[in-house]
Amino acid sequence: MTGEAVAGSSKVPAQGVTAATPAPGRACGTCTMCCKVHFIGDFDKPPGVWCKHAQPGRGCKIYDDRPQICRDFYCQWMLDASYGPEWKPDTAKFVVSLSPGDLNLLIAVDPNFPNAWRRETYLPTILGWVQMGEALGRFVLVRIGQRCIALLPDGDHELGPVGPDDGVFVAREPGPAGYVYRVSVQRDAQAGAAPANGTS
Image 1 (cartoon, rainbow, N blue to C red):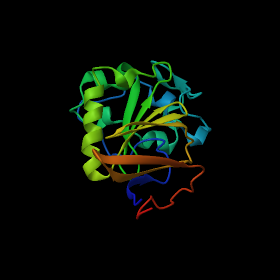
Image 2: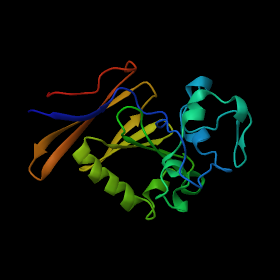
Image 3: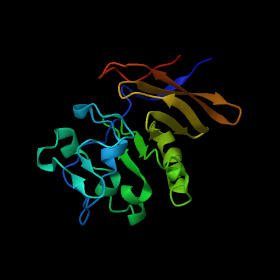
Image 4: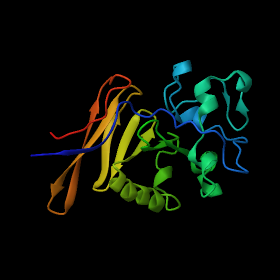
């Protein structure tokens, strides 16, 4: 059976894309959620645990000397003024960001609130992103600590533990009621490897 590869990521997104400036009026303030939910390679910090330099609810103890990956990162709440106050990560208990290169959407969730993204405040919007992403060949990935879930138009695909160097690849094939999606994880994918393409 032929499968069309519609999206792929050479690495599971660890943090979001670089942006020059936040939206007017937006500031991190006391929010430090990205310091918990993301992988930070400079400190060998796994996703889902607090960075050793974080002061939850206060800020970063080494803010002036923080690594470049932290300086460059802005979540979507910081970048997009259309996100209401309920989407600020310390309120939502998750961080929404675009992954580098492929612009897939990453929802990195506080493991203490693993179902926060499923609340009625957020889920309809997230499912809307899933449907919009289909036409663009992009997908939504939920990360809860090491656990990952790919949200696709035909449902949620549980991927289990996925490391920061693992690749997630998505393909689709026609089914009786629309496309059926297949998701695979390539362990320890090399950084910079080409995303999935062609047929299988």
